[in-house]
Length: 197
Image 1 (cartoon, rainbow, N blue to C red):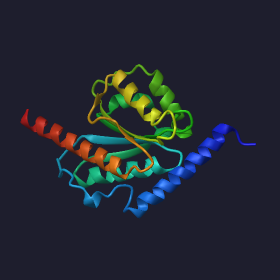
Image 2: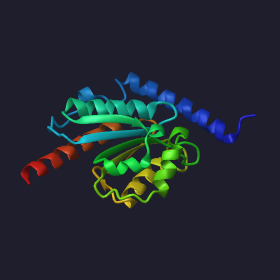
Image 3: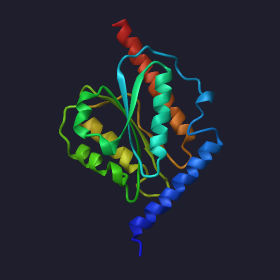
Image 4: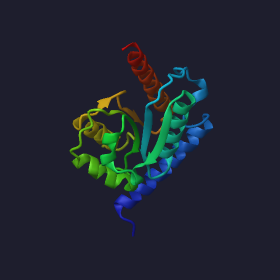
């Protein structure tokens, strides 16, 4: 007989698949063609988008966000947390995290090792700019808890928020749009400040 945790994960997977279908019916994970986004900034800094997912939603969003960055002149790469070592964050300048929450505020299974390493880490991330997109379901008590944990841990280790964390419920199209606009706007401001220095 399936455990309660297993049953919960199956239910959340079905919910995630349903919201993916709804988003697709609305024109994609986010309707970039309808957004008034900042133009190219000529940035040379590399952007890392890290995702943790069980159903594939966070991965699809991460790739769409990376595509939007590349279209505006940024060098962006996407990495799965299950294949990325947390200590490497100290080498990065910009890191954007897309993470879902499962069960009782837990990370997806594939992101569990990365999550544990980050929560117990003691690296110096003072050179890091970051932002978190948290996926969740507000019917659960610990809504977007995993994203909140990542956000707090990166700040504790010295990272600076480029843009505040955005928490997404089942209908995530507009929050993802908002997050993307915010990141591009913040990057444009940093580029303008650097050019003026």
